[in-house]
Image 1 (tube, helix red, strand yellow):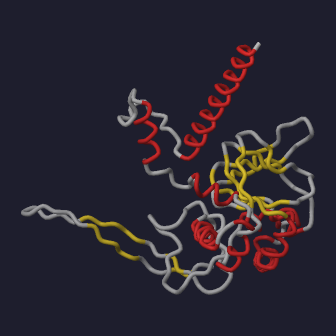
Image 2: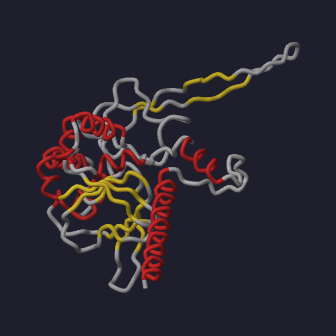
Length: 297
């Protein structure tokens, strides 16, 4: 009988060690994703060296380190002052929070929560009451508009790192208009509605109202209804340019955006690339010839 109990305890101990080992491997794989290519010369048959190499390797851009995850998940009441300062510095580096002022980011430190979401999980469901706002740190989220209860819905947009999800419904005071589903494994910062209203509410409401006024000031959008205006404000951005700044050219700016001039003047410059050659001493040079400036209406 004593031997049977000892064998049972030994089996449980081995199972617990296996579970702990799996947990450690899972944490390492999340912090330093393994390369899909089989041609990686750093991977060999020596397991300990492989793990050490992956831990020392430079982590992929956009992923949080294990220490950073632990710091975010630590309750604010037991964080030390250096840890709080370190967390403020970390929030300043995140694309999803870089748009806010340092004062607002400091106020977000005690109330934000970090969650990891598996691929396929529904983050926000259409027609639900909004109670949370999400900031995407890593991963990809699909914005889906449900056609009916049985349909999969229509993909409307793809949300990536640096984007905010769920703020529009809180600002408008309406139910969720779309379903958001994780397309890949994602890391999200969560902010509840009461904290959002106290910290980010005035700032976000001001920007939201400015977007609406900008759309109403342009004749292009007179035909839009209220739902379309909200969608335009969701994806639109207000940006200011200084004199002689370049909005975009061949290698500056995104060619997928459309710019509407609210105030000031914008000039269109046509540049021609010309090559010159000489017979005796062959060489070629490039020169930019600017055409006539045209006023952008």
